[in-house]
Length: 159
Length: 128
Image (tube, rainbow over all chains, first blue to last red):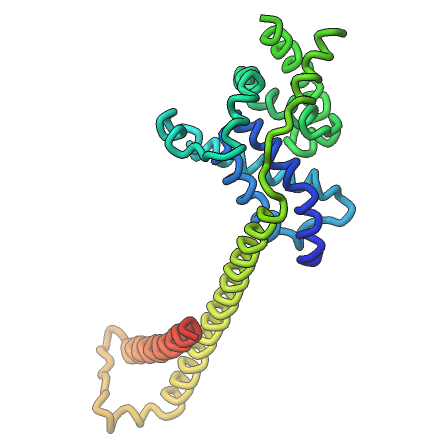
């Protein structure tokens, strides 16, 4: 894949990817942007390995999801609330955290796999098959995660 | 059915502000350029390291082989150099072992020299 082609594809997908990561990080814009940039650089470095038959967005989301998992393992999210508050950016993006607080709180109660499946399904609009590819699980497992996630979300929203 | 709509509505309203697209892409392009430069640098470094290792290996083998052939063909050359090794009666292979050790040492010296030269070239390349 050529550089220009990659840039064009990234340009189309970046917003959707960042939106998904922002929700996955429960509104932590700093972490979400960090992961998004890291994932895009990783994808760029590995673009020779991208198989043209595959869907670019699925491939990119898979890289981003794995990068998110790496961040989780490395303890990036173990910052204190005070650290997060100090690093919180100003501007229009800062209001989002409050605007979507209900959503972030609801998502925050879900286990990681259910949260990922729900977000990929509802925020990014992926099918069960595509979610299975991105998260590396089976379609049956994704269906179960979606079902469990929906039940939990309903319970939270009914409160 | 109403509950399902509620979940879908919750996500349908989710449209956070993601900043100016062009600005973001300009910044990202710069990062990608830097990543590409780093990638090319790493690849070039690996290639140079591999070449250096091959050069060191070959020079070691060649020097060792030449030295061994010369010593075996003309053992008398060692006498003027003051290297005379008496074989004790119990160890007839003693002189040959000593010779082999000397050859190994010579090979190591040559490979070390080649490595130094390669490293100096590498440092010059890095500066440029």
